[in-house]
Length: 151
Image (cartoon, rainbow, N blue to C red; front, side, top):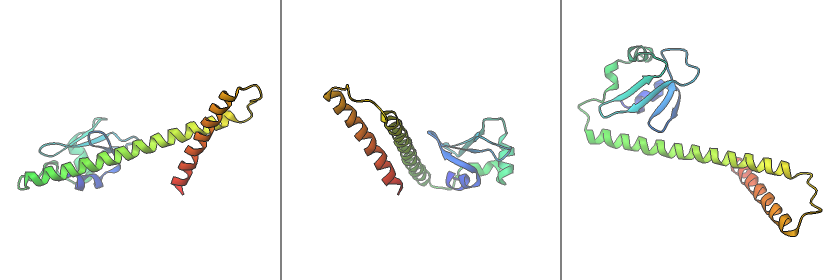
């Protein structure tokens, strides 16, 4: 069985740096404790709260032997599929990190704009005023880009 066929059997699957994490089907899992990774000969499945592999497979109605790749399959086909999945997984992880960075940037911009409201700028020098206005303008631009991206 390949990861493409195994992962849809699980709940709350998310990519990790080395494979996937999901809720363990063998126990009431509130936080994903099951990890799945592609090995050389099959899928590596582990529940970090201690469920054994037989219980996990029984809950999914699969046999432990199903986790191994079919030996009749062409190794080049398996390798190509693994590489394609890794490429997709890296792309999803990159997109996720970019979303997190954008959210953090937008949050920082909102905080900056909130702190700039009501400031007494009468005693500021022209240079300080110029720098502050540039910073506020940059924050507005970040928020506008974020708003436009969600529309």
